[in-house]
Amino acid sequence: MTYKAYVFDAYGTLFDVHSVMKKIHQFFPDQGPKVSEEWRSRQVHYFLVRQLIQGYKPFTDITRWALLDALAYSNVDVKPDVVEDLMHEYEQLQPYDEVPSLKQNHQDKTFTIFSNGTRSMLEPLLENNQLKEDFNLLSADDVEIYKPHPNAYSYAHEQLGFEKEEILFFSSNPWDITGAASYGFHTAWVNRKQQKWPELGINPTHIISNLNEIPD
Image 1 (spheres, one colour):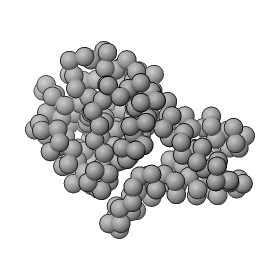
Image 2: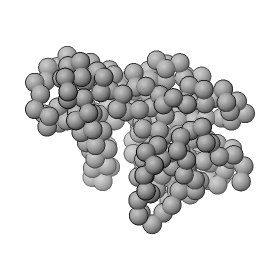
Image 3: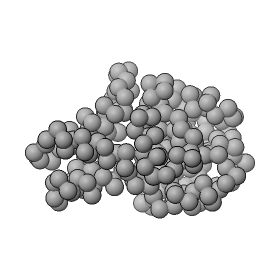
């Protein structure tokens, strides 16, 4: 199989969502890991709930609500300017080590990001990491349907213009891989922590430890 479209999730796949810990630590010493883990966990939980109740809200809102609850759960004194600084940090997330050279190492391939994040979150993130020219960008916000709903992948499929089996979708998130695979994409689970694939009844096409191992 020769893939014609290489599509990447953003958060946790290209960018380390826990790189926010450094900024959190500036405000709340020794709380970085706890707040960061709660923030991400609630972020995923909240957008899944909003999808299930068919009450779409942009990922900016979801991310802010998750942060507020993560801070409250951690029993820290929260000020509005701190919340704004931490939200801004989502535009400064650090890419994983291999990401800045990804396009240079695969100049013959076209790379596209397909994320639940809004364009207002993703475009500054790419700009701040000098990656704007490396990736095309698709957002679930364009159709107001979150992954892993099949209609989200259908939107990406239509925009890419290739057959399902010609598309390889990368994500570190099992729920995302499962959604993409169920829709019919070939998938590559980026298993950075060398974990066991969960028993979901659907398996990824490929399992890789990082993005240096892109299948042809």
